[in-house]
Amino acid sequence: MRAVVQRVIEASCKVSGNITGEIGLGFLVLLGIEETDTDEDLQWLAQKIVNMRVFGDENALMNKALADVNGNILLISQFTLLAQTKKGNRPSFIRAARPEQAMPLYERMITELNKFLGKPVATGIFGADMKISLVNDGPVTIMMNTRDRDNY
Image (cartoon, rainbow, N blue to C red; front, side, top):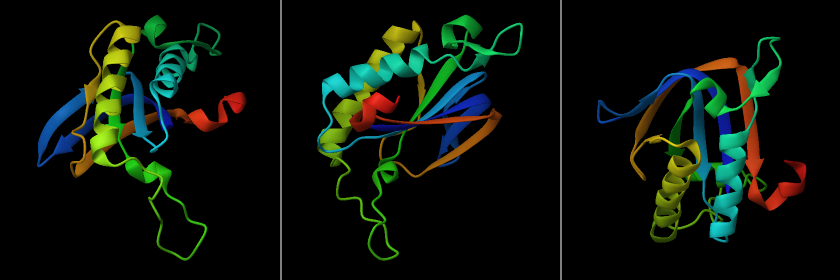
């Protein structure tokens, strides 16, 4: 699993002009699911996201997690995070999980984030053409890959 976590002041997702999810302070999480991903990957990533301390404390140091700032999450499925660009100019997405495998993992990620965060997570619509708006705070953008846990 790959995730891009952006600290935001606000973020929203629209599908066909309708808002499907929006948040104020928190994380916009773009999630790419690989064909070899497991529930163990999902658990590790969900806990890392919720407990990541990148919000400023009284000394402007990044010491606070989502719960400390009453933050929220907007979770967006994004298979293009699995792009391979080694050959040519057209990315290959061969490692991205097929929808029938990725969708249940995406839905379980929503459940896990809800549980760890203690409140509902806002979402896009899996597989839809989504329009994402955000105000990145900092900017703070963290990339995570469950295949490379030792570096996170």
